[in-house]
Image 1 (spheres, rainbow, N blue to C red):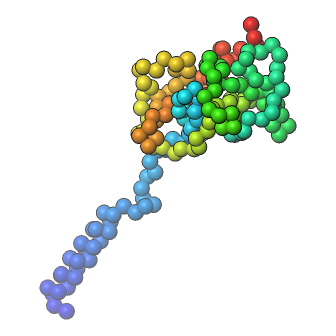
Image 2 (image 1 turned 180 degrees about the horizontal axis):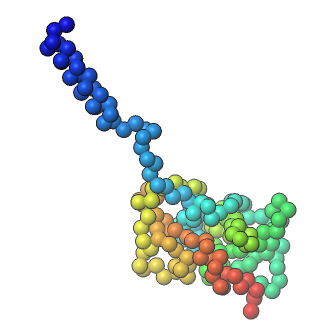
Amino acid sequence: MSVQASQTAYLALVDMANRTQAQVLPGDKKPEPQWRGIGFSLLGYRFMVAMDEVVELLDVPAYTAIPGTHSWVLGVANVRGRLLPIFDLAQFFCGQAQGAKHLRRVLVVEHNKLYAGLIVDAIHGMQQLGLEQTERTPDDLTEPFVTMIDGQILVQQEPWLVFNLQKLIKDTQFANAAAD
């Protein structure tokens, strides 16, 4: 092999090594930060709630009414041996359910000592989204739930409001379920 041929082969190997090192392999990529949430409808609006705020999704169970409570406190249900208080979020926000009764579902929340079932108009499944899809809450939103909203997320170019269940739980009106 001549000197010129060996230099050409060497340069070809160096070039190949440089191109290989410049490539990013799938395992080398850092995962994009993701936000996981559950989509639901309430009062004609589309919401997302963080996946870690909901422990379970249920069909609306049979429940027993509790006397002396607000109309939005529907009662308690026995769910696998635990008493689950059932709250109608549409009534809590002074509205009426928008969807068909067979589509209504319960978001089960468990935070500290609170274990509660929140009825929503419909569930739209889980979404896993990049954090860059988050936007701020629209300025013209005047609904009674506006204090529970932490912004909005675009899902297939459609805005979904980010509902903060922790703010609902800490709300003094929600915490006072007894009728006046």
